[in-house]
Amino acid sequence: GAVVSQHPSWVICKSGTSVKIECRSLDFQATTMFWYRQFPKQSLMLMATSNEGSKATYEQGVEKDKFLINHASLTLSTLTVTSAHPEDSSFYICSAEREGPDEQYFGPGTRLTVT
Amino acid sequence: RKEVEQDPGPFNVPEGATVAFNCTYSNSASQSFFWYRQDCRKEPKLLMSVYSSGNEDGRFTAQLNRASQYISLLIRDSKLSDSATYLCVVENTDKLIFGTGTRLQVFP
Image 1 (cartoon, rainbow over the protein chains, first blue to last red):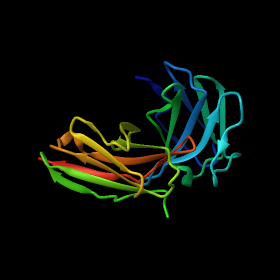
Image 2 (image 1 turned 90 degrees about the vertical axis):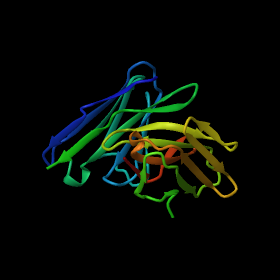
Image 3 (image 1 turned 120 degrees about the horizontal axis):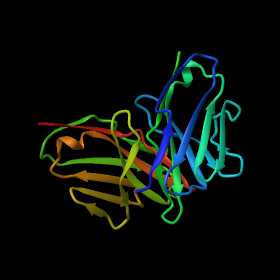
Image 4 (image 1 turned 30 degrees about the vertical axis):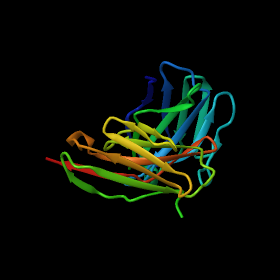
């Protein structure tokens, strides 16, 4: 099956710093990738849709200047959490859409803790 | 009202039991429907798609009722390894909308 990786798998950072999370599709090209966030005991919430070569589309309530998304190639999308605060602590999961079946394949997630 | 609603559970059942989860969705224009499984601190994994005609995969049976905007998942002969959170997922305009999940705990 299709494989999507994320790096890092977990990160602890101090308040005010920026953190970059990478999402890679390892064995297929993904024109579209998605970024989700999941707080404890809550559902995954779509943050933004990342399109290769164009600007990301953000969901309502998600600050595009705080969550910077770059989809520079067909196998890599990055999410940068700028000036992180403790309330940004969450489980960030990406998914990559494989064309044909248009199925989303999820990465293993990145657990971010901001102290 | 949430777009996708599920009973959060937990459902505690003994091995071998049959358990059913229900889910309702609010957008009648939703196109596709899925059940995902999520283990603690892991990413969700696709369990099965849900079709109007109903579909079965081994011990798992999924049903969709478009008129009632209702989706169900039936698990027969529960195994300890079935313990997880089951997420009802609806696709609207190429986006996946996740329910909060129903937690299942199967005990010996």
